[in-house]
Length: 143
Image: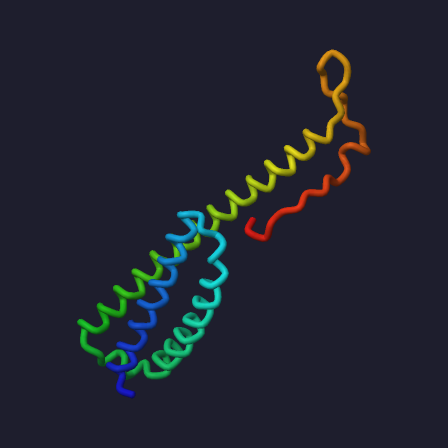
């Protein structure tokens, strides 16, 4: 494979990986959590292919240095776009995790509040150590 073909192949793989990251980011932002597992498999496969191609590219460093400036700039632009997509994806993942944790915390707090017994004059009884124990709550895998 010529160095030009290898650079083109690396660029295409970066584009494919960026497309998957962008698709996952959009799904996370729309809170379509149920289908997110599929992205992990796709990302892992593309990342492995990308690493192999980068290794091949690194082994041909001398040829890479002789590559025309236009091809090198296209490679740099692709890398920059991939980094932006990866950063946006990481932020979307962190946001979805934060939202999920808040939902879980709300469910647990509501379960605890519901388990507190009412006392006289409309006041809630002070919880005892026994009341502070684990409150069983079933959480769907979606969260």
